[in-house]
Length: 205
Image 1 (cartoon, rainbow, N blue to C red):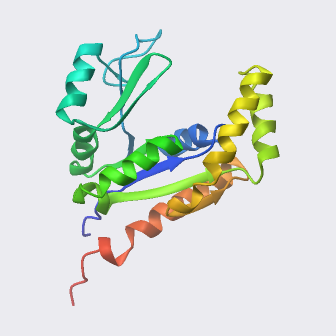
Image 2 (image 1 turned 60 degrees about the vertical axis):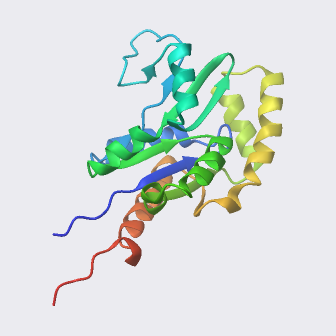
């Protein structure tokens, strides 16, 4: 069997869209799919391990990497910095692993742009936008999750409306139904992408 080039699978969704659940299911369903590990300046939480959950960096180290252009994308959220190393992605792709990215819409836009100048990443990149069928369903999920105050949910809903408008920038639009169906269709996308002519080697006759 000829080796199929690995994929860089980017999944994005509005807040409450279900991407974290889908990512966990994909990691359980396929041993060859691995998660890209993000760098952060925040302190480790109980049970978190360096190199497994995050790469925990000091602020000065993080800034040095930013200035060196090591990150594919980075952002500061609530006083803590987060970033995705280009070397992290390329290293795993070169090992033949399919790499999974779980990013918000803003992070996805940055990765799209940066991948244009990184041929290896561009060839591997497959982008999926996951969204429930309506804003009402997103609100229902956020309320049922019970993690946010009503005013926070209202802010998340306003952002979600803007995020959904970006679906046209992705390769695939996946309208969320059930967890099982979301997983089945995502796996179908992955299998189809692996059979694209652009990624295939010609058969021997």
